[in-house]
Image 1 (cartoon, one colour):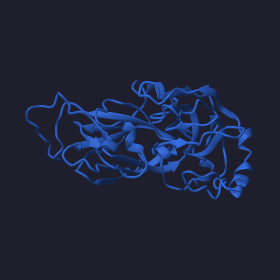
Image 2 (image 1 turned 90 degrees about the vertical axis):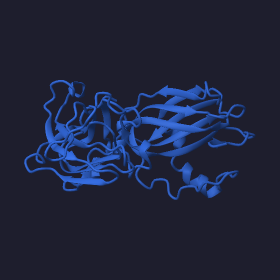
Image 3 (image 1 turned 45 degrees about the horizontal axis):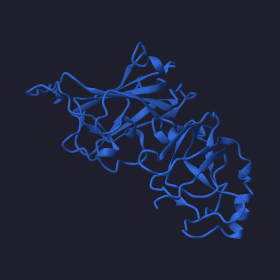
Image 4 (image 1 turned 180 degrees about the horizontal axis):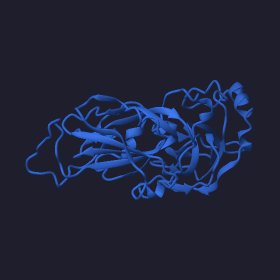
Length: 321
């Protein structure tokens, strides 16, 4: 089975494991997926949480099927007293791993920063996947004010808060870690139905088209953006002709499409296929605080990644989560 399955319990107690989140964050919900575990799924589940320092669980137990932890490994992990961690999700029943019943969604109301989760199964059984949903909450106190960071990165708390079209790939993919694995790992829109029969360009080679597509992002922290990267990796015959980026400083995320004071951070730029494009923000524009950005492509197509490098200047902007 492609999941975590414990042996049939023949001693008192129940089974559990400790999972370090991919990034510290504020949890808003979980999906306990029992796919394919039909006669051996865990009957009940609960979750606990903690916020630990880096390296609190070292060395990590190596993966090894069919074995129990050694005495030394249990001694180290028991020193965390994870059984006393605060409750994230009380004990809930699970459903078997058939296609129509495998996803067990639970909302979570926890406003604290979480780094590790203890997953309890009662008394034993299998779980295919655990999805923990929320917003990344980086410890910005450890970041010097003169350190250049990607303010939009998902790992730094960036969030896609709106888009016009995501037919082939979601806008949030733009701020995922690393370079895209394929086109599906980027943001790609449908072809616009209003594209003209014949295309024309201005004197700079930029196509003159009636429509465009956009995606909006909340930065992980208010800051001043000085460098930009637009990556069209994998998009060879379907990259946008051009793009531009707007920015604003707003305390009302619900009004981004209304009267929010947007200004041009990056003017219209001609794009190329399957390559990284680097830009320096013009003097005068890189000195303004930014909480949200909007990237607009014309007429349509795909972008794999967007990086907005800058310096932290303020507290996190408000979020929809």
